[in-house]
Length: 359
Image (cartoon, rainbow, N blue to C red):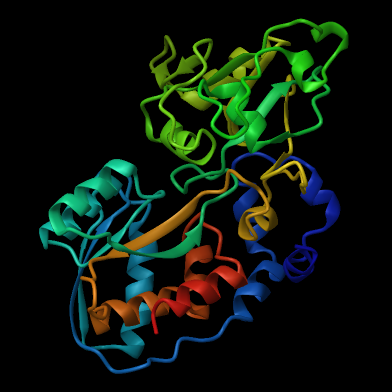
């Protein structure tokens, strides 16, 4: 991890401090050290000359074409190396992508989040095997529409030093699959003083939305049973008609509750709440979400952006698919990623692993 921090030029003070507001990730990515990291990656060199048509489905929106510039720039640069490949883009949303893949109307599915259990089951039912996934990006710290990291907040007066995934499971879940113990009072976490004997009040996303699905899979180990005391929030509107985001509603509710704990993101943080460092296990390290800790995945609630293709067992991936995915993991592909989106690049060991799948 220290090596990555040095490579990215992100020091210990930044690592230990909560991220700033929404545009902080883009600011850090614009700095030369981050670009230097990407520029150190191997350039794209075609393993073979390919041709054909690639139909890409996935993350995007009719109303907000936030993936359009990224995909268009990827395709334009790829065409300089592989001019005989044409593209047809259908970026209508993650929910459409896997269905297009198993129905045969799409060739590559680029998701805006990890594949859902329901989508995976649907592909298996249709094809009889799993889709082949290639990770292509790391989610952002705090940029909307680019899979920002989940963060845990407490009231500013709460001295809680940090939490592990097992402790989060004990607080927010009912089944306690990680360590077999529900955590319902602050003294169970060693918090005394004014919170001695106080019940932990959890706040979070509505439990049937995609945000909660990620937390359920990553933290609750797939359990559908949440802490019954959980207060759930969804998007609503202010009296003047402006949007009131669920993440902001969660933080605003926590701000008035010294015994509360919340799932949200630093883009919504106020002076009355404090982000808590997290760790995969009690061995640590306990870290805040920063570009460095997301890229090297020291931070447990990092989001990962995958692409999927349909490769039947015993068969090789279509050459055009393979070359385009190799390009996305190259110096050029990852540079375009950080210049034209809110995503972060993959860390070196993850790039190496995913490239190995494409040989």
